Image (cartoon, rainbow, N blue to C red):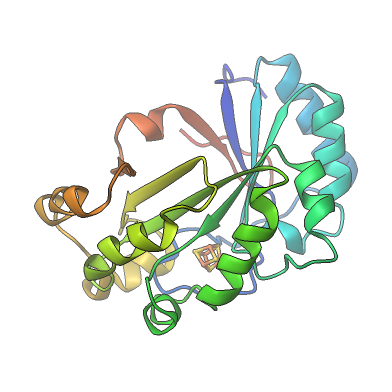
Length: 229
Ligand code: SF4
């Protein structure tokens, strides 16, 4: 890993996913590191100065070795963060997930079951159950992808999250530049002005645009270990 490492590194631990969101900008077809390569990469990241490792995807919980890799990252002294769609989280594995990850991020893209499913993220009820299951045990954050389709949901999502134990809610502007998102951009694209106008309905959420400061605060590593810009 030759490039200088930032504090936060987002690793596409797998491109596999159990959902098929039409606004997804990931899921390229690439090789995936096996367990020993991944452990080696994690050790190297730590030596290179990374402090926070985000296990992203695809759906990271589809990796059978995910707990082993998280344990290795913790042993190396890294703070572990899981970006999951929540589908594979349940009462049986919630405690283990909370022990393995310092932060778990869940997606909420609609304020009603229908709106959340329309965006492609599966059952809202399940996501909220998972949120409540994990929030007493580890730090939970929520992310929302703001698009033309769910712009009207933002105020409702704010109400839904009110009073729940979450450490942060981030609202991302739909990024039409890659993957399925590029193909379906007309369905989802939202202008900068429309996105900015959602702020007043979103309480204390952090608003994030592609190419902004947030994007520059971390570096991406693909599933095969290649470093993005
Ligand atoms: S947006 Fe996330 S949950 Fe949806 S298909 Fe892409 S990786 Fe899977």
